[in-house]
Amino acid sequence: MELWVAFGFGGLIGAFIGVFIGRHRASQRSTSAPVVMPPPIPPQRFAPPEVQHVVLDEGSANVLNALNNRLAAIGALADLLHGSPLDPERARALMMLHGEVRRAAEITQHFLELAQHPIGAAEPSDCSIVLNGVLAEREGTLKELGVKLMRSIPADLPMVACPMAQLTEMLMKLLDFALRRLRDSQPPRELRIAVVEAGPSLAISWWDSGQPLSIEAEARLVTPFRFTQSAGGGEIEFALARALAQSSGGTLRLRPRAAGGAEVVVTLSKSVLAPLARATPETPALPKLRILVVDDDAVNRQAMRLLLEREGHEVVAVENGLEAIERLGPASDRFDAVVTDLQMPRLGGRALYEQLREQRPLLAERFVFVTGDRARDETRRFLDECGQPAVMKPYDFNDLISAIGKVAAKQ
Image (cartoon, rainbow, N blue to C red; front, side, top):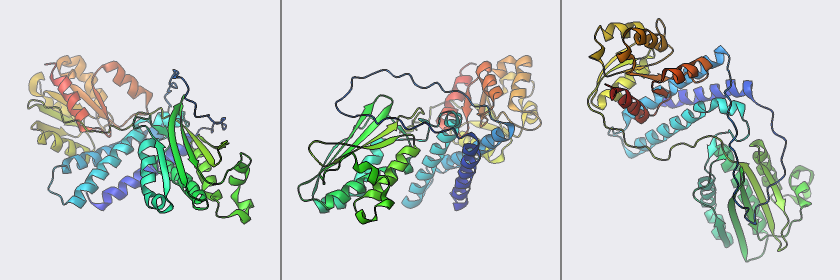
């Protein structure tokens, strides 16, 4: 994958975030009281927040659709390169590129929820992975200080509503805060970290065996620049970590400990969004099919054709609905599946489907819609009402193959 792909991808994501989040940023929820961690609380049932769709203006919907088209093209090109003879460095870069496309796909998929629910709808992150990664990053310092590390970090924790980069920085600041305190203390040095579910949130507890801190010390720690005489005690790290937690809708507080030391409790909302799939299933096996691909985007059309041909299918690719009608001809049995975009010039996918539903209903039942138009209510209503499989751009190729298999099986 050439460098221009990566630069273009980054630019598109930046433009998307700038346009939409600026328009739809919701007012921040007022800071809630801290959640007390232990002792463990009995499990409770919390109803997930209702997700309401946001109606975007025409310009915003078009930008979202255009971004999804570009992400679909990049993802399909990355799929095509899988299995190519590449040196280990380039193969690794290709895997990373594909992962970033999937993450961007999740952001666009959940954009309406992001706009409607600023708390709990940020990009989801795996707290256990990030926390263990941060501890590995400071492993040398922990060994140098002779710190006895005790951690209770379950591997099956729910995702938290905090972007990975922000969560990493926050937890790194807290670890550096604890290490500063431990460096100034006498052995034995201990650091205990525990993560527990607390209702709709996750609570992360950090306890170090440094000098005792009273709850009144929190006022000093969150305003470090007023106390220049106490530099070196971790005030800046604590203040930055607290600001990062609050910007994600969470809290960060000191908790008094009778046994001394200092305990910091971070509370973050669980994500209301679905996490990325951790493993990619194998592509479903289908018999050789004859497939018509209809998409006005040249790169998407060509990439989809090549991907389907690589799976052994016979593919005809055209630019719009009028060309599709010409290719379909009078007989309904010429194609096993019709894979079409919705938004196209001259004749779009919806108009093509509705015309064939009246004239050739058996052929209309073989339609699969592939679209990046997630924002319009009319699109969602049409896809719900027509009953045909729909795959949202940027798509997972396995999802596309599964949808084609469903309509081909109707014959």
